[in-house]
Image (tube, rainbow over all chains, first blue to last red; front, side):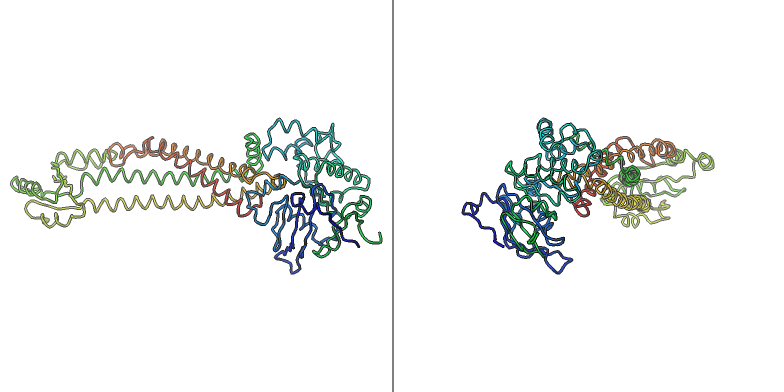
Length: 245
Length: 294
């Protein structure tokens, strides 16, 4: 298994969007670390699959990037900023540069599609005229034009996930974190979601996607970081889900 | 900050927990009302102290068979004493007049008291009110036309300690109520935060500032505190109009009890409102910091 080689330009710091240096995360309740001395770098514009069985540390990895948790040891850097030393009031600023998509969509049930997307902009104080302009744009991009006034429960699962992606992307984040975004969707719908994520990736947004879906990983042939028991078991630039599949 | 957004969140929050909100408002109102009552009593006590203490500290009651010489001897002694700031002579007639006024609500008592039953007296203000003993030694009871020397301060002290006790009890109950109100506020805010956890989770993830996320909850509590304060002020106004002004009209007119005037209520109202809003907001803020992950 060839480890991913780096060309010189990748070591220029400003291109690195995400940098983990010897990161260990211990949760108080557990004796075994969720992440154990993990070091990795992710460049601007990369598409990375984060794979591994449940409990391998994928979610912890994503949580550290959002500064939902702090590492026990090591440093986490996002866009050149060290999260360890970042003060609490700076965290919202960090999160504005990151979009999040989850397996369970997390839409607000009592708001329409457009309101759900607009919500993400309203609460960070974007002017109303900006919101009016960009929400229809992003809805069109994710393929939901004409459904702006529907409520989430009037949509299919795939459509709901598109709303969630629109909400995550509407503020043009530097990084899009997707935690098993296709986990609740059938293969065909999943494929549509993947095409959308790929499209977002082509705009220059780094996409990090935690997944169990080996069909997707195998067909996309993107960088794969495999975690196993909190350790990076594999980091491959054009990887597949697992050997022998 | 998007005012509309925040206000609509506040309104939704209050409506969604209507029963808790009502409980929160009522306990806050009772607590603040008692606090206001305590403050009014405190104000009344200091008014009364001004009425009584300043006028009279020691009374020298003269015997019925006092002679004119004895009276003028006492007077000249009072005049020359360095302990005495001022004094006032009250004749039998004046004493009876004051008595009539004081007990105008009890005409039977007035009727059954003959006009000459009340002794004439010197009402004395001391330079130092603590020096009662000196005066008592100077005018021994039962000699030289003096019937009795009485330390009015002593009686007033007892009266005021009673009033102080009433004030302290009111404030103590207010504090206990305030504690209950604060716990209710904390509970309501936890419930509100739980009800809106989807919204706040998303707000957190998309990078809404802490203030933006917390402000609706804090305003919710502050608004409830304000409504509670308004109810409390309303309660005080009703108490004045229905109880103090009616039941206590006589003693107030006679100058025994100082009236509760609108000025006092107007002074206390902003204090109550400030306390209600401030405490509720602080309770909400602390709750959010301690129990709710935002």
